[in-house]
Every structure is written in C-alpha cells, then in structure tokens.
Length: 232
Ligand SMILES: NC(=O)c1ccc[n+]([C@@H]2O[C@H](COP(=O)([O-])OP(=O)(O)OC[C@H]3O[C@@H](n4cnc5c(N)ncnc54)[C@H](OP(=O)(O)O)[C@@H]3O)[C@@H](O)[C@H]2O)c1
Image 1 (cartoon, helix red, strand yellow):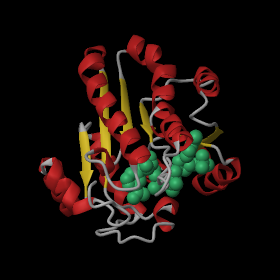
Image 2 (tube, rainbow, N blue to C red):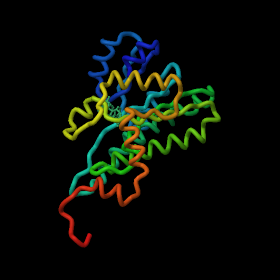
Image 3 (tube, helix red, strand yellow):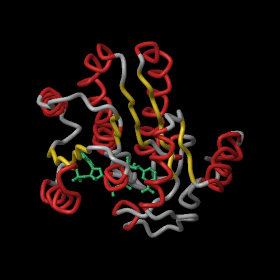
Image 4 (spheres, rainbow, N blue to C red):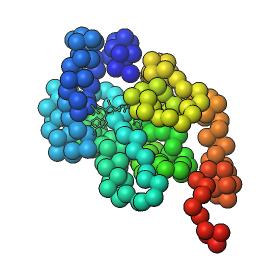
C-alpha cells in the first residue's frame, strides 16, 4: 500500500513496531516515506506520535492487525484482550488522537482494514472475528455520526492476500491475491472514497451468502467435529 500510494503521488507516514523493517522501507521508497515506530495499542504513545506530526494526514489507513487463533481446548481471555487491543483499539486510538484536528479542519478520510471474518463467526477465530466485527460496526456507526463534520469512513473487507500473516496459514486460501494487486484495487477505491471495499468477487459473493445462512445451517457447515457428547 505504501509503495502504491507513493507511486500515486502521496507522501506516506508508515507506522509499525519494527523500526528496522520501516528503515528498510524508507531506504527503498525514498524521501516521500516517513517511518515512525509506534505500537498502536498504546494510546499514550499514539497520542504523542499524532501530536508531533507537522500536518494532520488527509487519509488514515488503519491497517495494523494480528491474526490470532483461538486455542481448541481452552478459552484464552488474554488472547481476546490482546487481539482487541490491536485490531480494534489500535484503530480507534489513532482516530481519537486526530479526531478534533480533522473535525476542526472539516475533512479527513478514515480507512480501516477489517476482514470478511467480521461477517460471521468462524471456528478457532472468536477473538479475530469479534475484533473485526467490532471494527466494521464501529466505523459504520461513526460514518453515520461524524459524516456531518466532513469526515469520510471506508472499511476494507479483504479476502486472502499473500502477506507474512497468511504465509503461516496451512489451510486452503482460495483466490489468494498478491499484495500489490490488492494495494492497487484498494487505493483505486480509497481515492473514490468508496464506503466499503470487498474483494475478490467470488469470496465476496460467498461471504454474502454466508451472512444469509440461518444459524443452524451455518453451524452444520462450519462446526469443528469430534469430542462431543451425543447429548450436547
Ligand atoms: N492477509 C490477509 O489475507 C488478510 C485478510 C483479511 C484482513 N487482513 C487484515 O489486513 C491487515 C494487514 O494484515 P497483513 O496480512 O498485511 O498482516 P501482516 O503481514 O502480519 O502485517 C501486519 C502489519 O501490522 C503491523 N502491526 C501489527 N501490530 C501492530 C501494532 N500493535 N502497532 C503497530 N503496527 C502493528 C505490523 O508491523 P509490526 O509487527 O512491525 O508492528 C505489520 O506491518 C490486518 O488488519 C489483517 O487483519 C488481512
């Protein structure tokens, strides 16, 4: 996304925790890329980072996320908290830190990366699905609430994209897109201020269908088999 945005003439501030990788990107992308090391889960650090910016960004692409999987046998509350801290509060920390400035300026485009996992609960992904569903719903609500201040809100619901996150996934990933293809698709629509960006088409249609399934059929198709008592 950063590479494609710079190619389109944007100046990009890239935020992540691993400074050495950001520095590598800065070397590759040149002077239009400003690296900032920050953990978006740390609200105080995010506020300090945003206060130090010389100019309020025109577009916020809130993409930081982790794909934590649930334990098959135990409910790990800490994993839920960690996942929400980054996937949900990470995005909200940045929006909150710049909200007054965007409101005063009467413009700002907030783009969040959610997931098709926001649409329905999936096995072994309660924390991830819930964090993305919360993000999708919060942004939909914010659009209705704060649109009158001149703010635009876009939610991205990607299917599978080849990144370090999916590189560790051993399950089938139908219609996997290369990251640069996804970046072009996303930025074309961000520039048009689309409200909802969903891709690729077959996964989009499949997940629309999944959303319509009654709970009993959704359960029948997706539940993890085994280790269940007959009386359950
Ligand atoms: N790849 C897919 O198929 C797919 C599908 C649907 C949705 N998504 C969503 O797309 C987004 C990007 O995912 P990806 O596939 O590119 O994953 P990735 O390869 O693991 O990249 C995640 C990025 O988020 C940054 N990050 C994570 N935690 C952070 C934190 N606390 N503070 C600041 N930066 C943080 C990471 O940098 P550092 O580790 O250096 O901080 C990294 O740059 C995520 O929100 C993910 O849920 C991905």
